[in-house]
Amino acid sequence: MSPYRARRTRIQLAGSLRNLGRAEAGVALLTPELDAPSDELDDAVRAVLALCLSGCGRDREGLALVLGALAPHLPRYPRSMAAHARELTGDGGGTE
Image 1 (cartoon, helix red, strand yellow):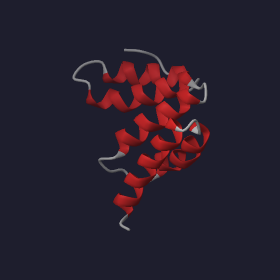
Image 2 (cartoon, rainbow, N blue to C red):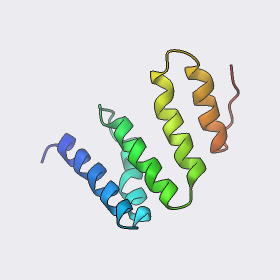
Image 3 (cartoon, one colour):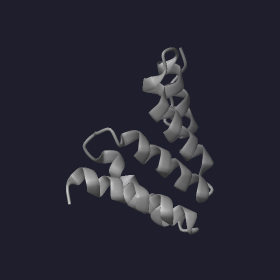
């Protein structure tokens, strides 16, 4: 299986685990993907991981992850959104 397809499979499995009430297993499966080589699936990893984090009661972490993924795509305020994402997890950072 290609690395791309394996990554896609992990994303789909994590989403299924979350739907089955096993969000922690989804978090464990996708967290290492944050350090994987970047590709077009990065935002999908972050979106599904955010849902899994929320399913574990870790809403702030999930929101931070989604804001961090969204920030580079925003036409305005990308730095401030990224800073807000860091603040949610206690990583500091100000706003513009």
